[in-house]
Length: 296
Length: 258
Ligand SMILES: Nc1ncnc2c1ncn2[C@@H]1O[C@H](COP(=O)(O)OP(=O)(O)OP(=O)(O)O)[C@@H](O)[C@H]1O
Ligand SMILES: [Mg+2]
Image (cartoon, rainbow over all chains, first blue to last red; front, side):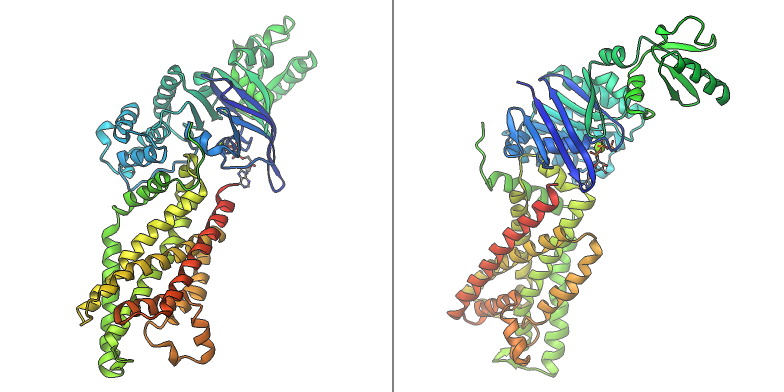
C-alpha cells in the first residue's frame, strides 16, 4: 500500500487554480521531493494531506485513510513540519515537545520528549524558552516536534527555507537519518540541492500539476542529458550562439550570465564553441527546462 | 486503530495544557490586574459615591452593591477580550492553530478546549471582586460557592463570542467596533453601578437580554438571597453558552479549514 495516493486533485482559491489536477503516488519508505517554483501549489497540496484544506475535486488516500473524512486518524500517524515556524516562543523547549506529545496521545510523554530532544541535539537547552534559541536550533526543534509520536509519514514543507548553508546541512543530515530508519518523507522544496541530497525520487510541480516524476538520474536522462555545456561571453555573442544551437535542434537555457546547452553530447562536432565549460547534466537543468524558472 | 470519536477528553485536556504552559509565563501580570482593578473600582465608586451620594440600594450598602456587580465586569473582561485577541493572534500571527490542527485534533475540540480554559480562568478571576468586597464588610454565605459556577457558564458564552468575532474579522483593529458597540454597552447596562430600575422602561426590557445583567442578578442572589427566578436566569445563560459554542465552532471551521 502506498503511503500517499492523490488522483486528479484540484483546489481553487477564487480565480487561482492552486492545485490543478495533481496526481501523485508516494511509496512507503521513500523520500519524495516535491520540487517546484513559488506558488506551484506545494504547500496547498500538503495542507490537503492533513485535512486542513479541502479539495474541490479529486481523491486523497493517506496511510490507507480516505481524506478529508478520516483526516484525523491519518494525522495521528503523520508528522508535519510547516513552512513557517509556529512554536510557542515563551514556553520552554521541553514544554513545546510535551504539549505535542499529549496532542498525539503519546503514552510516555517524558520518554518521547527525551528521545526527540536527543534527535534535535537540544537536550542541554531543554529548560530554555524557545525565543532564546538560535534560528538553527528553532528549526531543529520544529522538526523534533513533528517526531514526538514516531510518525510513519513525515511531511516537510520547505524544511530549510531561509536558513544559512551550515544550518541547512545540519538539518539535511537529520532528515537523512530519519529516511534511513524507514520513515516515509514527502518534502517540498525549491532548492535543487536539497532535492538532490535527500530525495530518492523527485516530482516536479508547476502550476498545480506534477509535470515530471522519477529518480534524479532518470529525470536528468529524460529531460536534460548526459552533459551540459555552459558558454560565457558578451550578450550579443551568446544570442548568436543560442540561435545556431537551437537551429540544430538542441535546447538552451539562460544560466545567470551564461547560457547552458543541455544534452551537449548530441551536438554535431564543431557546433559548440571551444571555450564552453562541460559538466554533467543536473537536476537544475531538468528544473529549468521544465518550469522555465531560474533555479535557486 | 483508534476509532474516530468526537470531543475526546484527552485531546481537549492536551489543548488546555498548551494554554496552561503559556499562561505560566504571564500569569503574574494577569492576576495582578484582575485583583487590582476591582479594588480601584470599589474605592472609586463604592467609597466615592457610596459615602457621599448613595448610601444603599434596596438595603444593600452601596460598596457591596458595586462589589458584587463587579463580578460580571471581571468575567466579561477576562473572557470576551482574551478570547478575541488571543484567538486572532494565535490564528494569524503565531499560526498556533495551524500547528495544533496538524495533530489529530479537530476544530470542535480546539474551540471547546479554548473556551473551557478561558471559562475556568474567568471563573477564578470572577471571584476576586467578591473576595475584595469581603474586606468592605460583605458577609460570606454558603450560596456564594455558586458564584464561580455562574461566572464559568457566562464566561463560556463570552469566550465563544470572542472566538466567533476573531474568526469573523479581517483585521485586528475591527475589534474596536465590537468593544465599543457590544462590550461597553453590555457592561454599562448590567446593573453593576446602578440598579437598572433607574433606566427608561425600554432599556430595562433590553437589559433582560443582557447576559451580564443576568449574571449580576445571579451573583447578588448568591450573596443576598436567591430567588426561584434565578433558575431561569441560569438556564438562559446556559442556553446562550451552548448556542455560542456551536457558532464559534462553525466560524472557526470556516476560518481554519480552507
Ligand atoms: N489561503 C489562500 N487563499 C488564497 N490563495 C491562496 C491561499 N493559499 C495559497 N494560495 C495561492 O495558491 C497558490 C499556490 O500556493 P502554495 O502556497 O501552495 O504554493 P507553494 O508551491 O507552496 O509556494 P512557495 O514555494 O512560495 O511556498 C498561490 O498562487 C497562492 O497565492
Ligand atoms: Mg509553500
